[in-house]
Length: 97
Image (cartoon, rainbow, N blue to C red; front, side, top):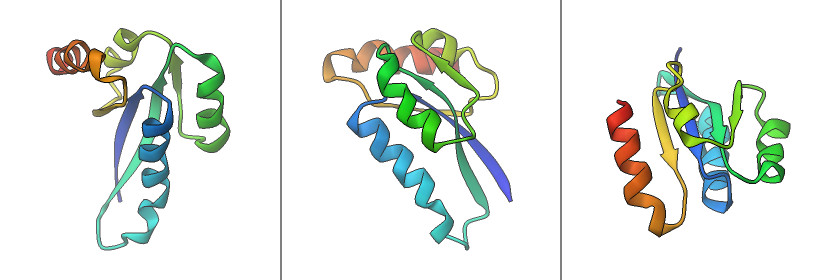
């Protein structure tokens, strides 16, 4: 099974919803791809603890989204931030490739 590595920017409610969906991926056996969350970013260190406690695949925890976007192992990013930050972070993600 092929692995697909995700990073999450914004670890609040919507980030946790996405992470929970990744955790339930095992109920889709006909799909030959396994998503893994390997990097998370949030400025609130207390929020990131939930991810570290529940996802052993996490290799990077940062408060700087630029560090996450520079991680060559991250193949896709789920951005779960307030609306006023969408343009800045979406454009940065696109520029990062």
